[in-house]
Image (cartoon, rainbow, N blue to C red):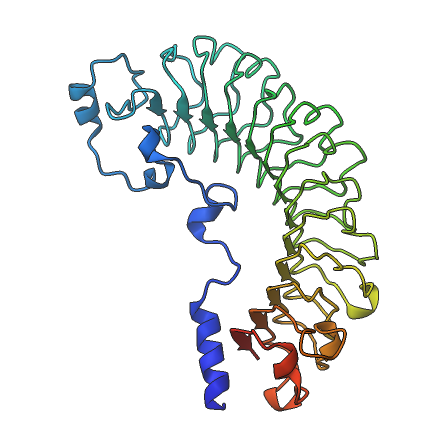
Length: 364
């Protein structure tokens, strides 16, 4: 192996270009941050907490349910996670704004579980056994911004969700349908995670009402085509690990602000991708790794990150990146990954350096 190839390979192993960590996956595939400066609890420190629960009880004079911890630093937070709970039976303090119930055995929550709570902002129910949520459970929680129900047994998107939601994380359930009404009032929602479910399609009108949606993750479902009726506001669209048969000219054309597009592990082949499928000047990152592409696809000259590793590419087409000659016609590509294909560096056209003149890293 030539020295430059070895260095590129080593860098590819050390650089987390576009993956997710195990810590990310615990909260549905997108990192979770809570601003400690605002006096809010840090969810990132939930795993491996070493504080003695008796310290909380000895120091904090506020009422606290027997099955929870109530840190004096965050009097509005209740840590009721990983306690083997099967339900919430005790009356929760009215002050509760951040409720952590992940890692229990909860299969149902009655509509009265939150009856004493009026200002709930965060509700985390990850890693339980919920098959559904009572439609009346959250109807009065107008301040709820973040709802996490990842890694449960939901078969459909819950009904009765409050209109003020900003993030809805339903990853790794058994959801096979969304429904036309479930998301229709969530005009402020910015993040919707549905990866790892059983969706075969997104029907017309099911998500079009999400007027503020920024990130939509539909990875790891049973989709066979790109959904046609997604919110125009979408900037991050993740469709990896589906079985997409083709990409036509209009697959993404209506998303004029799309910046990050992930299509890895989709079984895509070059003949089934229209040459203008990715004709979006807004696109910053495109992931087409682990497909069956035979040639480099045509991408916008404004694209900065392109992942093509582990395909069947044996032809490097320079016009995929630069359409015209001249000093101002060059690609803005910064990272290009081609390792795991049938290409070698000596097979690249001699003038590739003029087209990819601002490239920082090339993996081959």
